[in-house]
Length: 248
Ligand code: NAD
Image (cartoon, rainbow, N blue to C red; front, side):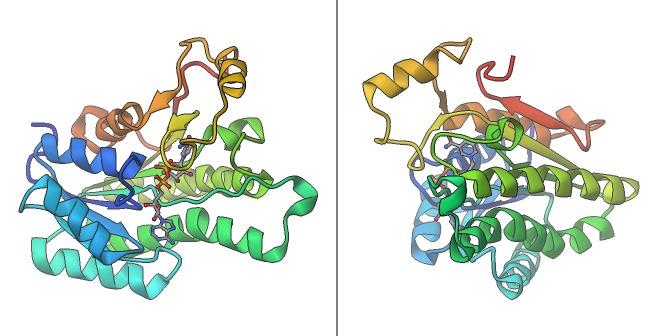
């Protein structure tokens, strides 16, 4: 199995239809122990319990540095190590450039960018100590094409920041055999996008997707599995586009 007994922390993984939840499910199928972190501890625990007794769910707001460190300590105390981190928590706001105020900017960048920084800082000392680890950062096609349907320009900026941060981390952590890679999903059907697409909008979007379908959370989860596992042992600082060909 690709993740046999690997301890895998996934942020923002409680949402039922989300990318994080699908990733936790796939990691568990491949032998990993999934540690689901999300804002609501009860929801996170329930999501983990659905996967089986080897898995855990804890409350953790990734914008709170102390909470990230406390969560990492708890995982190491219980399981002895952390092998994989997926920085998945994120929020969107469908605002136009001139509509973005300080609170909007802070809310969106805090979760994606500050959250990725803090949670990575919390796990890296443990990975470094064991000279082994894989961190996967969920960015977005919005970072690459400067805008999306549901995320505003501040979302694009935060997700582009994630790509830069991941590359800088990859460079610095490579000598300790900690790999850091990013995934840039296109339009994926989850709670962020679900129910908000009219038939006309969907048809319009599909014209720009050569594979002629929207993505699903499992499409992204499979790339996370690849980057988390030894299948990608010589890959670091890379960005994997999972968008049906949107950028061709
Ligand atoms: P989702 O809303 O289903 O899941 C996001 C999860 O993050 C939720 O469970 C939420 O509770 C959690 N979360 C929010 N703020 C948090 C915080 N401060 N601390 C901890 N957890 C927090 O969304 P999704 O579509 O599964 O998105 C997952 C990731 O993929 C996000 O980073 C998103 O930006 C990115 N993404 C999504 C799409 C898409 O089309 N759905 C496309 C590109 C990128």
